[in-house]
Image (cartoon, rainbow, N blue to C red; front, top):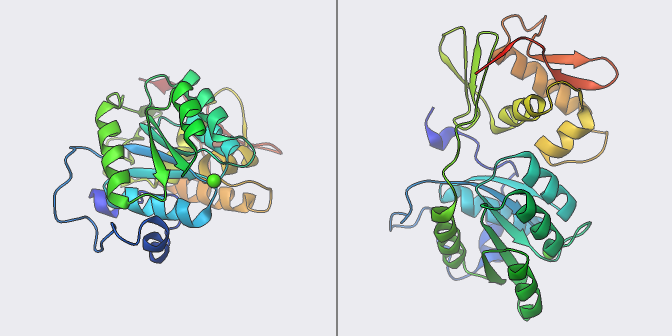
Length: 271
Ligand code: CA
């Protein structure tokens, strides 16, 4: 599947807002800029930023530069997503609700020692920068920043990100490449998965042996909270089953757990 047709950012983008929020000077459309990127691979980036417009702008900008982007809207969500998924790099605002950026940095750094962290700080926030670097952040950008400056810093850090381990799951005649977003059933044709579908499979597989609630799926895969949207989980899983199950009416891989949620099926796991 061509990279350009894959959904690379799980936040909806508001491209009209990007230019206003990020720069006014440095961001030119259409993207990408005329000069080819100096790095040779996009990386998986987690953006932790509570301000909606800036979060969407960052997602749009980074996705436009070839990265696969996910977003979190507060510090607690940032830690949850950062620990649940193998990101190559985190762009982290410091002033965040629920858990401040310094604490997010400390927790992510403790669990993922090799993962580069770029912090965003308000002008005049030198003390915060010092604290952030002291907690293991690798670099910082001061708001307001230009798009080119941010992309250059991200590219520099991306070069330092450790090579991504292949993420594959094989079970019951199904093989899934979670990095390439491809599933193949019984040696048949490749089926494209969305990033969200891969996120569902990754989360269930990681917690195989127990059930995962709809609320957990919503928080860790959708980046959303609350019970109102759990129907969205059920609908997404119905679509996913049609792609991966031999018989979607009797699922063996993504199984329902009555009253609780979903679980990785006990079909035998293979390498
Ligand atoms: Ca903020």
